[in-house]
Length: 596
Image 1 (cartoon, helix red, strand yellow):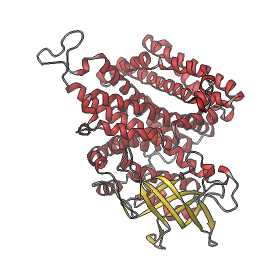
Image 2 (cartoon, one colour):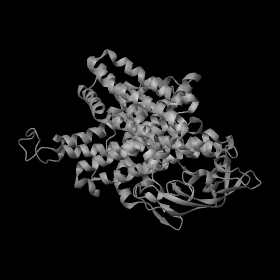
Image 3 (cartoon, one colour):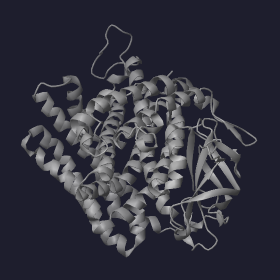
């Protein structure tokens, strides 16, 4: 049976020592989020994840959701777990106190999101979709919609979804056909079918609020003619209770490779009553508030699954006796050495460890920037934070889920045949991790967003800010021989990234296929560089604390050693990535369809 313990020591190191989470308490509205409060909240969150959600993860996968004539039942234990979850206020951890939330920084929810995904990814989908709906309504809903619906989302008694995809319209939302006809009373009649709707129907909450993209009768073609509507499963009464059943039903649920405890639904809207969110024909603006948050959350899924897979693979490697070390017995009193003595096993586990800890540092930094973007009193500081968050969103989504999936596979391989069977739990993490590379915009779409939208945005200002931040820490490492050695590969990667950026600007402008052909390679190049930068920051802090005799010497020493591993064994990936970027599109686009 698998186990999970929230990596609180590493979480605290990243939050307090590396990124200085104490500065969030200086932001308006975050005054109570002192380091002690943040630690206490996350410690309680860890208990919920370890003791309530993790125990029903494997059983929830085996049982899955069931469908019966429009009714969906979640796996055994999910209802009770959700009651405990909402009773603890976790649905409103970062929500506005005006609507019943706790008002904690978004960064705290970001950390909790990682633990949730490690403990029970399927369960995390339900409150995760609700938080996305909360964000969209907060940003674009009118005062009446906010007053009526936000408190219910915040306390968890009602849930939310986002309804984008149609059978013929996945990534290309411009061709969706769901219709919205004015009813004459300020409401709209919504008709159409949406597919792949996570949490579209479930038995955890008394009502579900669907945020639906649809077209008005006179809407222009393409994405410029899309509006967003809130369509409740039950229309609320004047007292705020679920009233008349609306014209939305679940036609079926999907039978999936993974996340089987999350209901993925076909939803049929048949003259359902809906209420416009935001302005007519500007629904994409509102939906992207939800989508960008969801993309960051999906990135955390890649990290969370990689972390729990690593914990179990490491425990197995320490206990599994098999063969002898190539340099002589390390367990001479036993029949064999643990497989952790074998270099290839170590290399695999170190790749996962280095990814997990580097990704955690990058993600938490971005989480803090979200708070700075929305709360800081200085406009220039807000702009800088917003630039970096926008640039890093596709990187976190795609890079974390690509490497997160690789990490679950490495962890499975560590267990050998035992990894392939259900008892040990690793195979579930591989299956669960695979969807994260697909939904909320495939990783190829994220790469196109990065090179096609984010790089040229504001005349290249976003990427220049990132370059400047990395270069500053590289320069600061010059006074320490060990840090200088670690900074060198980061500096080399940065030069490659800058060269690739210039190449894309030149070739991609003349021929968009040149950018499209290497977009994923470019995103990975930025991802490896960003994690290398974070490892340099962590090693810098670890060296300083070791020199001062502070902290756990074993923990801090491992940080420096893992940083060396990342630089020597993972940063060389940037060489191949740059070579592929320089190779361009010619050989990719040369074949005709008949030649495939």
